[in-house]
Image 1 (tube, one colour):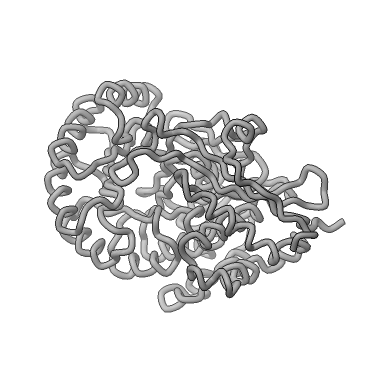
Image 2: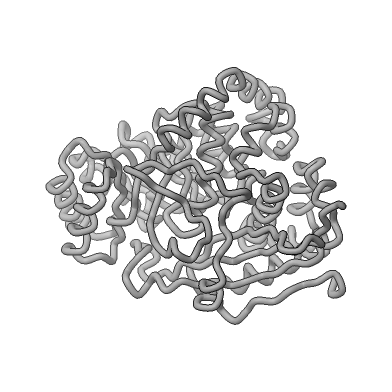
Amino acid sequence: MATIITGIGVKDVRFPTSRAGDGSDAMNPNPDHSLAYAILYTNTPRLEGHGITFTIGPGTELVTAAISAYAPLLVGQSVDSIFENMGSFWRQLVSFSPLRWLGPEKGVVHLAVAAVTNALWDLYGKILKKPVWKILSDLSPAQLVQLVDFRYIDDVLKEDEALDILTRAEPDKMAREDRVRGTGYPAYTTSAGWIGYSDAKFRTLLEEKLSLGWRAFKIKVGQDLDDNVRRASMFREIAGDDVALMFDANQVWNVDEAIAHVRHLAQFNPVWIEEPTSPDDVLGHARIAQAISPIGVATGEHCHNRIMFKQLFQLTAIRYCQLDACRLGGINEALAVLLMAAKFGVPVCPHAGALGLREVQQHLSIFDYIAVSGSLDGQMLEFANNYEEAFISPAQIHEGHYLVPTTAGLGVDLNAEAYEKYEYPNGSVWSAQLV
């Protein structure tokens, strides 16, 4: 019997991370990490597709409303028919004229597309009884290319170029899969470095993470240069010089400020400065990148579509690509960015410093290594530990590495206790009868 989507559930789930200062940075001092959550119901009992996009509290209800608005495109559809040409179906989602007008391909409606797209992949994984990274890795180069919408990026990456990238990676895929299963995927942690933490908490958490085998850390920086220097000095005093350090400014600086601050922070030998200015300022990022070299520029968590990434790659404006499949239009659009990054030789280090994101992004990083870039040269995946107990199959870490997930789908299913405790009262269900 064909699996048919019979309804869409939407949930607004908010976790009180602000109470402990978790997730705090220079731009967002008191975020409550939250999920706009899409649930695709089917005609098969207990078979559901779960997809998320990430928010930080009030405003999540806007995204859940947008998710519901995509119901007419989904309810009544066969999952098999969708995945017979998933690339074409993804374009239908982003081309749905009334909602496209509100973007296009950016903002609240694109966050909703991310949740819906990710829910479809989760559902497909559960049907095939495979994790999403494995589904993608097992596809042929030709099948993968069919998932990508090349509209607006084919001046930089054409279909035949993408096919060549994937074909070159094909011969050693199984060897790399075996390798990553054995060693795990390299990670760095933000858990010790939130800007709202006291010096004592910063020190305690850093020492704890070092004892657990972490060798790469990110700390938040802000507008106060003296405070930035002081915290970076503490880091090097505790961790030593052999541990990788990254800084994250979360967009608080103008271009000239960014250059000045990073030049002062260069004494601490950082790998990168993340989000040094407005995420939309492509030329500004290019100027910063040139001025602060050899320190790299990293950005992408607020880069809203593949077209923005195309420009960053074209201008050599970033050295590290921090795509987010919950900010982009889900797994499909993330594939386009992975392919462009491979063409330009830019390591992909996805944004995953929050609950839910880490569960999704691990699939893309592992797939990228196995089937696209074939490289771990500069690639790392962010990790922050909070509210793992809310997930049925949370991401697993050992000695600074993600363990390869084995759960079918994306592994973002929340347990019943988490819904009961953290759901904001805005959930609703759109059934076939309501459409």
